[in-house]
Length: 291
Length: 257
Image (cartoon, rainbow over all chains, first blue to last red; front, top):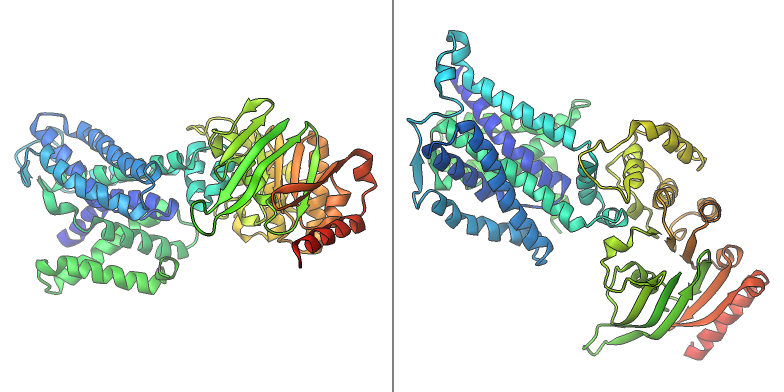
């Protein structure tokens, strides 16, 4: 039971990031590697702020804003300086490593165990027995649901339409007298904001910030998005955002199943990428990108 | 009024393949004119449209709309007053969005793309009417993704979408070239109707000499970055396809082929 709960918890945390990757990869068709560093950026911001006494709930918004700022940087490098999409992401990803460390005052590891977080505070402690046992998963579910619903609503607005259009047919956006560059920047800001939010939630749930938590985030995000959109879209009319959230949980379940079969933790990233490769091959998603 | 003044455009500048397309090219298109442009491949027809829309940079000269210099205005800003239909029907619509969503976006052109609902429910009846004027049965497929429609249906939608909001210029870039003869005919009739109804100033590049003769009130023939034939009024009305073919042959002989 506790393993299943753990999988769901992790799945929900990473689902926030996967929703961001869904925006860049599926909607914008932009392979954005900056999430590998915006995820720990969110964690760094949240951990540092919590230690400074900022209310834990508020840190989520600040982390989102910090991530959005980083995403804007990726967008500006790509749109204004005309650097290729993949490289713009790598530039920001690398630069953020130093920035993340500078946020935590050059500490690669920042524990916040004894601090109040969105998961551990006076209110949660006061809850009765059955509720308190599942408080973490309930809080995560609430956050993910709110983000999912907001994202779904956003996609139905004029601005959301334009975001979907820019990945679908850039020329049409120009024909509508809109700058396609700024629409892309907006999408990247949103996506990286979500990745940072995910990181902020992650560090509060785990109780620490660690500089290397972001490694492989993009692989995890892409795998989740592809599982979600390819597998779950077959079950009738299911919203893409819901599919991505479910995809993340399935992905986490597969990884933890592999681990439960006796694999050492040191092989975690190897399993992660092998698993991603299998998904790509099975879903035949490689054809589009490889020439 | 659209004015092209002393336009210069080079391709591959500074290399051995340098090619001068336009050298001191000037053209004035008046309000309400429907100009058909014909000419052989590489004569500068599409380049001219791209220069007007700002899709490619210009090496010299100025472009003015109603006396206002737009030479340095970025492409997307120029599109406020320009509607453009491309040769490829896929370029004018978003394949992964529904007909309704596409129509709503086109309707929002010129307004801010903010956080208001993308589709205004009260406008749906209006969209239905517009779509039914195409006679393609699209008004009953509002929730269908545009990607599953045929090229002709998509081009009809592209034409409708580019002329939905008030524009001054309609740019048609061989917009019937990728369609079968019957569909091309339908789209062309629709184009004539829309231009007339909305009293648009239109520039149509075409390889179909019959359309060039039948539609529009002015005709340009281009060759090596120059206009070799420019007729309007009675001269245009009395023009026949045979005359145009004769001109075409004359140009080709000059070139030595």
